Amino acid sequence: MAQVKLIWDFRGPNGKRTAEHHCIHLKDFIKMENMHGEAIKVVEFSEMHTAATMIINEEDVPFMREKLKPHRGQRVK
Image 1: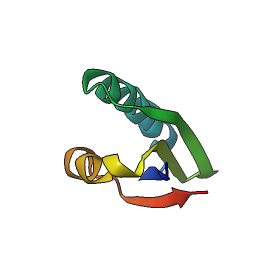
Image 2: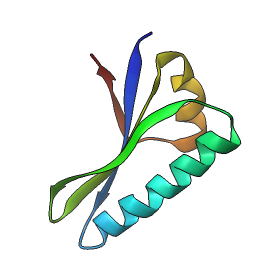
Image 3: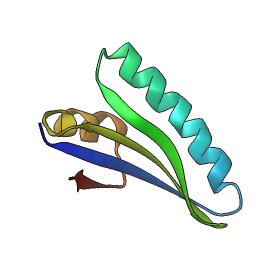
Image 4: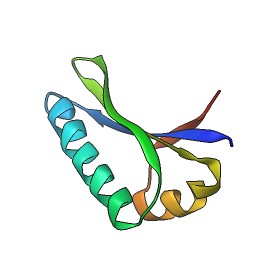
């Protein structure tokens, strides 16, 4: 099954802390919705740019886009 990485970008001096907090909410959401999400993590690009990411099945993308409004996404190979 094809998978997609959803990405939420956070910028500024508090970006890392915000991304970490967002990951907590992502874990809670997939548990509440009985969905499969994996590799929920924080990716630090620089001191001023951090992202929260989550890998989901491609079939779940429309639902997640509507509910969680990711900033961007990319296919996982």
